[in-house]
Length: 180
Image 1 (tube, rainbow, N blue to C red):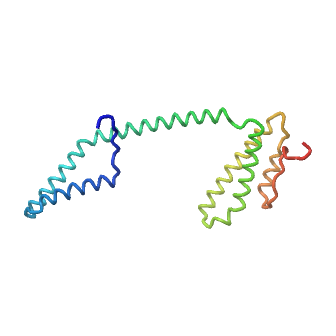
Image 2 (cartoon, rainbow, N blue to C red):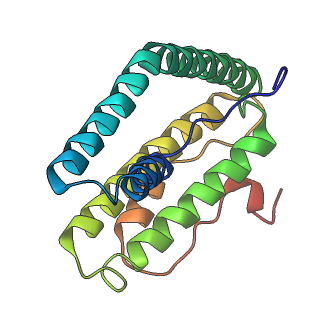
């Protein structure tokens, strides 16, 4: 047993353990008088609870320790991921162009299917919120793109106007124009 880790049993298995224990006790007491048998089963159940109660502090402290370690590891991983994503933000024109196009298409598709696929108002509300978030990200990316010195600026009013209309007309971005 040295060097092996014991995995705690799930709740269903613990219930099965108790039932199995009490069933074995019932088999050993089946020839007793009913009152004595009931008392004996009660004593065995109280003994089971007492043993579990005695080991509870160990089980809870080890569970807390494992949870704290996992939380710490996930927090570190999240910090690393955040620093990695902050250092690799889409500052170059190519990444911004792809991001802008993808967000624009995503918003258009969500708006197009908003009332067709969702018959519940609650679901539509979530999609409307998602559209608003993506629209905000799109405008932020356009602002970043417009701040770059070598790119042709994108008119945000035109983009907002295209998004507000229900036409299936796509946007022609400055980097897609044929005269470039």
